[in-house]
Length: 322
Image 1: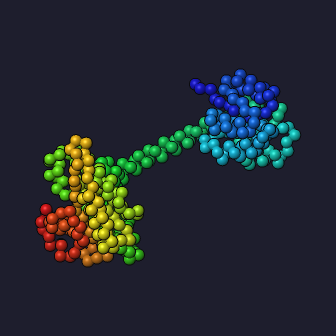
Image 2: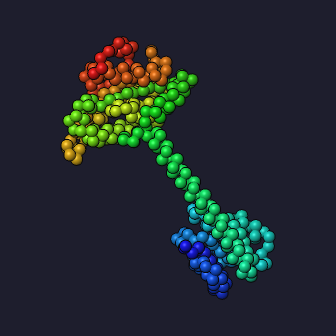
Image 3: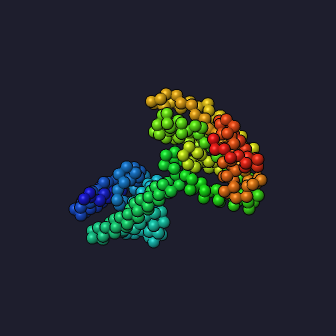
């Protein structure tokens, strides 16, 4: 087991030697600093388990050192302030106020010093365990949250989380009579692409198109992988014409971007978009908003692909599935 490390900040060589021998004989590793600034530097670099800090030092006094420790050293290190026997109550209160955990008057009893150091080490162990547990639980929570919310292939939000956010945003749009737009998009002729190049290359394209589109949507908009080669974008506070303009920028960006595949060289991809917005005819629910955007998407694909279409009621009669 590694020895616990005690930093002694004491300008008196005699006092420092006495405390060091006492602590080393008790099985601790000891480092000595003769100045306040030296103690701060060692605390930063060595991260001791406990600091014994004298009040009287040649540069900074112990109160200044302790205050600086609490402001600059991120990990918790217990501080035992060593005070003169003649120190008044106010000075002892000041020591606790600036962040010391305990104080001990000099000259001190050997057993009392070791007992106080041992007690502070127990406190530090508890705090370290709590911090480790909290960090571990936070990381576990973040990992589970990512699994629950994120599509594993593209890194975009998944369909289930998108549906949850859509319900929330649609309720807000209805309550406050705000516009809300949805964009459905589909990579053109993707099944044919997968047949020619293979699914691994198809996954590579999905990842690149996802990143490309994500980097060009506006802050506050939400993009998700809806399934297969389909992506969906939710645009709060956005009407149909503004959403269509965004979709056109995304369409153009994809069309003009050449994807350099390591095995197949330059690949050109196009995407078709369908747009619908609330409030609008036939759009009175989240399902209707998505259905109308989907009808606009299929209308655009039937009209030749690589284009943007905004939902119109007459699109509802479209039966073909291009």
